[in-house]
Every structure is written in C-alpha cells, then in structure tokens.
Length: 118
Image (cartoon, rainbow, N blue to C red; front, top):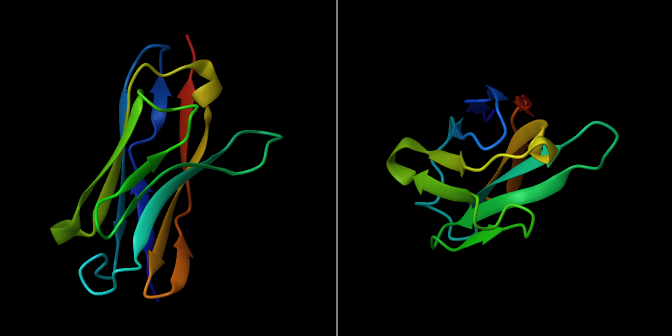
C-alpha cells in the first residue's frame, strides 16, 4: 500500500502565497524512469484539472491558468514534491490533490483545501 499525503493548504488573501507538499511512502523517481508526480485541483461544481506535474527526468508541465504563478519542484531524496503558489487568485480556490504514478501504478492523496478570499 502506497500512501500519498498532502499538506500546506489553507486560507490566503488574493495576491498571497502558499506552498503545498506531497510525500509518498514509496521511493519515487529513482527506480522507474516513467514515474511522475503531479498536482490536480477540483473546484466546486467543476471537473478535476491538472495543475502541474514533474517527471523523473525533471521535466515540468504547468497549466496555462497557473503558468508564471505556480511552480512545481521536487526533493527526490524525500519522495516529496512541492507546489509553490504565488499571486493567488480567488479562482484558484479548490481542493488540491497530489497524484503519484509509481512503477506503473496510480496513487492519489486525500486532498488539501486552498481558499483564496479576502
């Protein structure tokens, strides 16, 4: 059983910053070159959408809606990825989920709430 645990959500004012963390209980990136981790989000009444992901080789993808404001990074030694979120907007309000693709299996965290409001 692989555990995926997110942390770092909360309430922040527009223009503020947050950093989300996601840690897996299994080693990732260093064994299988196909491994990747990513962040998705789901706002009320909307479909879950990909926000950003990072591959074993370090390549990153960021959705157009967050490009220039959010940055995904990783600490492979700690099996952890981060989502650095700056210049937050009310439309960034959502539950953020971490997804880990480890050795051809997909795992999800329980989600962490991010609320951007004054």
